[in-house]
Image (cartoon, rainbow over all chains, first blue to last red; front, side, top):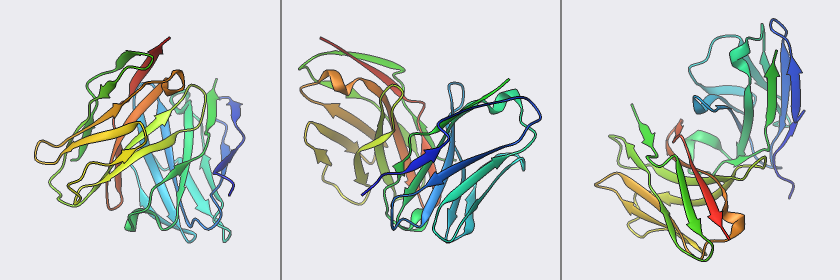
Length: 115
Length: 112
C-alpha cells in the first residue's frame, strides 16, 4: 500500500505570494492532518480534515486554510506569505483521525522557503 | 495545557550499545496515547512505537521499548543494540482526542 505523498517537495516563494500544498493520504484513510515544523517552534498542529470537513484547527492565523476532497486528498493554502512561514509542512493521514485510536502516518513533507 | 518535554536536545550512543531517550508530559487526562516518532535526516517521519495509557504493560517493537510510568508522566524510549540507521531526530508525542502535541525532539547520533 502506498504511503502518504506530498507535492511539491520543495517550493520557493516571495513575500506576499500565496501557495498551495497537496497531500494524498494512504488509501482508505479519511483523516488528514497538517503540521508546520520549524527549528524554533518544533511541530505545530495546523488543522485536521475528515470527510471533507475541517474537524480541528490549531492556533494559526486565517492566512492558513485547507480543504479536503471526496477522495480524501487534501490541500493546504497559505496566502500573503511571510518570511516566518518558511518551514517544513507535514501532512499525516489516519483511518478515522482524532476521534479514534488511530496512528498517524506522515508524508515526506513540503519544504517551503519564503524569500 | 498538555505539554510534552524532551529534556535532551542531543544524545550520542556507540554502535551496538543501548541508549534511553527521555520524555515527560503534563496532562490531567487518564486515557491517552503516547508515541515515539523517528525523523531521519531529510527523510520521512515514521512511527517507532505507541503506548496506550490504559495499558500497564510497556510496549516493545524489536529493539525499541518504552518505560511508561503513568504516575510520573514519563515515557522514555530505549533503543537496544543501536545501529547506524537509528541516527535521527526522535519526537515524543501525546494525543488525547483531537489534541496532539509533540516534544521538541532529541537528535540521536550513533558512533561507529
